[in-house]
Length: 117
Image 1 (cartoon, one colour):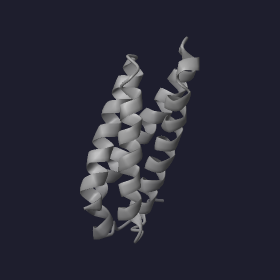
Image 2 (tube, rainbow, N blue to C red):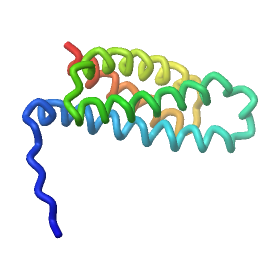
Image 3 (spheres, rainbow, N blue to C red):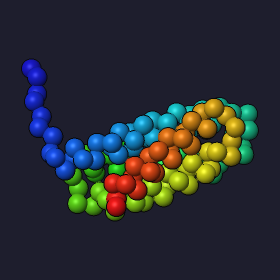
């Protein structure tokens, strides 16, 4: 059985931001797992905590946009702030996973700023 779904036009306009949030959430989850395995894990408590926050808010922002929540724009403003902070923290570590995560966080922040304006 194939379910046909009509996408609400208000949701369609957020698709680029939804995609960026989903990619950022995945990058943060992967980076979080990798950071826990690094030899200097003791030096990363702030990074590890913000990765969790960032993954969670990106996931929620994606959900709120997908359902067309009237609070999605305000929520994405907070998401952009957390993504910026996460990128700033990740860039401090030279691991490939942290550098890539910082890139995804910056892209997500940019898309969330666009969506919220």
